[in-house]
Length: 87
Image (cartoon, rainbow, N blue to C red; front, side, top):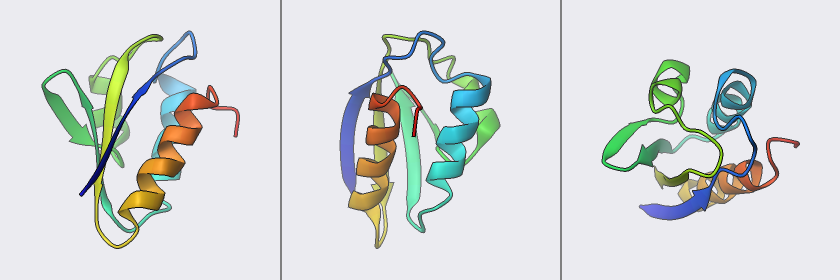
């Protein structure tokens, strides 16, 4: 399992459009991927799951992946979050 923490920098956080970009990116990988905020963990490939976390700008989240491309998955998603969803 590969794990990395990242702070969501964009103002709106992971809502609507940014969440859609995040889900699309997560679905490019074969690994199982999760997003964790505080003690809640959801499937990173589920739009409803990600939206249910209510992630706003400035929130620290943890991205975890388990599988053959786990490191690439986490690094790719962290880069997307750090870019402010301007990939």
